[in-house]
Image (cartoon, rainbow, N blue to C red; front, side, top):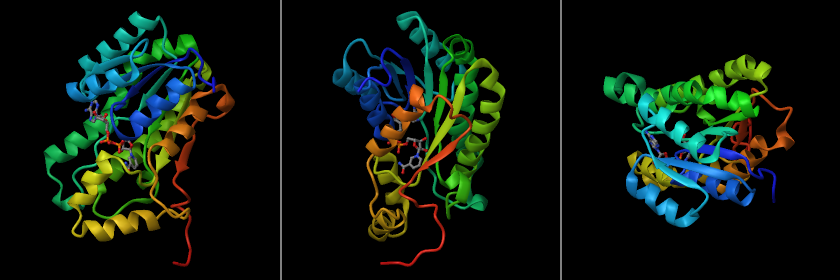
Length: 256
Ligand SMILES: NC(=O)c1ccc[n+]([C@@H]2O[C@H](COP(=O)([O-])OP(=O)(O)OC[C@H]3O[C@@H](n4cnc5c(N)ncnc54)[C@H](O)[C@@H]3O)[C@@H](O)[C@H]2O)c1
């Protein structure tokens, strides 16, 4: 595979779950990857896995100064930037809105949404130069909602709206902007969310059932879609919020 040959891709949240699978897929497709994680140890583990010429960086994507540094380090190292994949996210807490505390709200907004402001602010000029891409890992719940997950759903709904507005703004620069919308994907985040539910065992069964294709996937299914969206094969696709969800969003259906 060489769909992403020599492209320089910066992915946030690239040290676990969906992001880690994306890093593997991007490297397999020929890219040079900068993977960013929140905690030092996960970055070191990923570095040991991927080695040179790829770059592992610790940063908090909700911090403007951190984001400025990771973009600068990317360009200093590779001389260009072809894509930013905004993948880092938080799913906790799992609550209805009236029980959501101010700090929980702020934290979700900052990590899931404000981070796009920062990566775009600092990465725009380089993406304009390369006629590059922005890709967001959003969520299907930003389109269809979810019980007991109001603030999280709101951040993802905002990302879906931003995807369209950014695609309109940046089309004239040759920058494409798209999102992938998973339903559920078995990752550390999802396992943590399951543990927050009143009956974790029933919830695990539910996670298989919501996907029409019959199972809760791993991150590789999302990574394959991301390779496509970042490749020239998707050169005429922009402003799309693409479900990668085994049909979870499709309406009327019978059980069994
Ligand atoms: N897992 C699912 O079921 C699912 C479903 C829909 C959407 N998503 C979205 O997919 C994305 C990835 O989710 P996942 O399940 O792989 O998560 P995960 O918790 O397994 O991994 C999250 C990654 O993001 C990084 N991260 C977290 N906060 C950060 C911060 N402030 N700054 C920098 N990095 C940070 C972590 O270091 C880690 O690398 C998220 O945006 C999530 O909302 C996940």
